Length: 389
Image 1 (tube, one colour):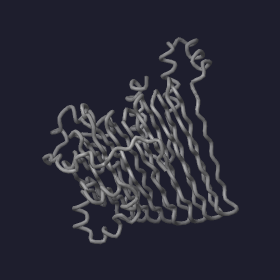
Image 2: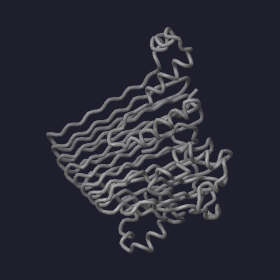
Image 3: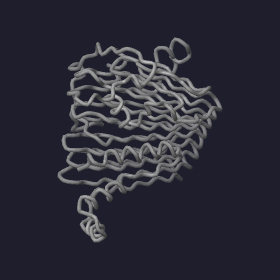
Image 4: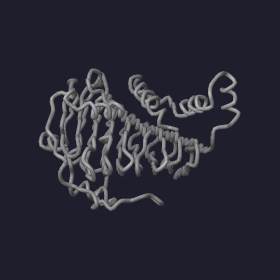
């Protein structure tokens, strides 16, 4: 699956150490750490959040739920509280899938458990931050997210690093369970560093009439990002939407994709990617698998190249039954000179014109996303704009 990718030896990184003290108030964080987390979408005042989970390196430093019917805790505590949770752990992701999943299985460093009870709808998003602070450390987390029947849960997770971190590895195992009639949106805004390797591995299970929205935003340098989340639409009329906004500066290598397997009649899926290379390399994958009649799925990948970057789009459609509807659209190119000249004729400089075009290209109106989370995404793009050129 992952070809021509920079792959580190997982044992080159430290898997012990990185302990930090628990804090009751995020205002206790250093100004430097707060700013890094804010750039990843974290509200350090927690005013419009239904819960918060913060992990620095291998330590849980802040964790609480603020709304009744919402559970937020580290996964070890959750296993002690809920005996049944062991049946969910590793039920979607195979610990032997690769060296990264195996290391997360052998040497786990917490991770979060977020659950909303049946019929409960979160007033505000739950936020989580996985923060890398210690050089050459591997952070191996396992996250479990459960949206119980007829519930609604919105999560914003911002991963970030200490500004002067030289190297590090983040392994993130995430398993999602969307029960009958539930809605779950999961928005990731990542603020990595130039020397960090990132290896998320995730699987989602969606039951009848369930909705799973998975948003991924990465606008800054990262040494190597490699992810290929999979969603199984197991119930009739289940829906999955993937949205990715990726910017690869020079020196960054991103191999990012998504797969949705539509298994029951009436299922719907959409994968949308906006990719921008300003000198880095992006491999944008998408794979839709229709197993039964009566499903609809669409894949869209659009890439924009500035400078000497590279974008490789790989759309795949796999139909296994008659009477299904699947389509894809892929396009990679550069900004047309006529577009720049048009805006320059209206008083903009060349750089300003290019910036306007890029922002318009990256802005994606994501269906089913609360207005507040859409604002967070727009804000992340605006903050990252100065890093594009």
